[in-house]
Image 1: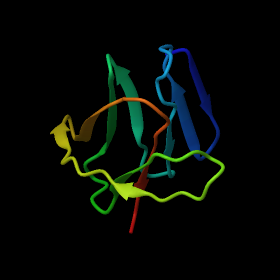
Image 2 (image 1 turned 180 degrees about the horizontal axis):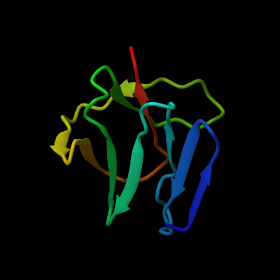
Image 3 (image 1 turned 60 degrees about the vertical axis):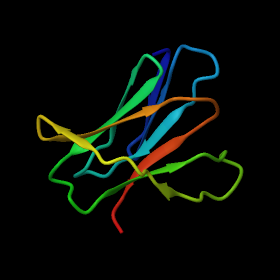
Length: 100
């Protein structure tokens, strides 16, 4: 990882590789979405106790209104954490947990 920036509501992580998307997650005080980079994948984790939350992705840029879509990958459970592994690909992607 070449950089990490935080404020009280967001965590942004950028890979050292060129053409790798910045990944952004919204977090609340009770549920945190964690992101790690492994090879060409983003590994997203959050507690299994967060049963009412849905992982969402947005492929846009910050100059347009967000259209969040549900991530259609069922999480694996490891050490009481939901875990989803997604290919990084090209472009920018933003991730969040939504409580409908």
